Image (cartoon, rainbow, N blue to C red; front, side, top):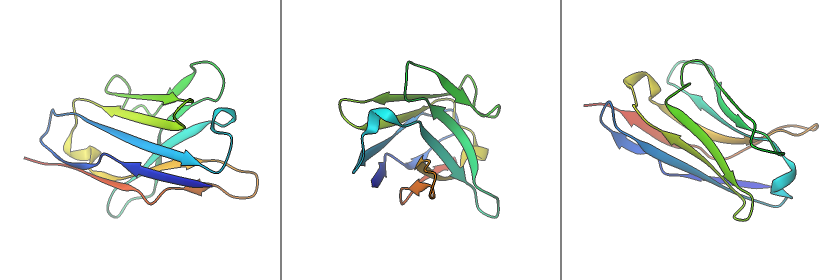
Length: 115
């Protein structure tokens, strides 16, 4: 299993970024995919989930209405569209696939929201 994130960077408050996570090594369409983030000095927190079946999604209250998770099963890719970014969104963002024997994580991509 391999998860590779991209799309992070420096953005001004109110700006937008789109993160991508390309997955390999498993049947992508069968699994719920998640985005987590970890800010400096804080615990890792769940940001959004995209279920394997249908179009069901879940969001943390802190990002509802601003972030959108989506997936393209044909490209084995999950996305996180982030709009109206705030300084408190600054964090390393990780792609995740849960497993009964231990979760799989990408290397993370840094998002910095600052003027």
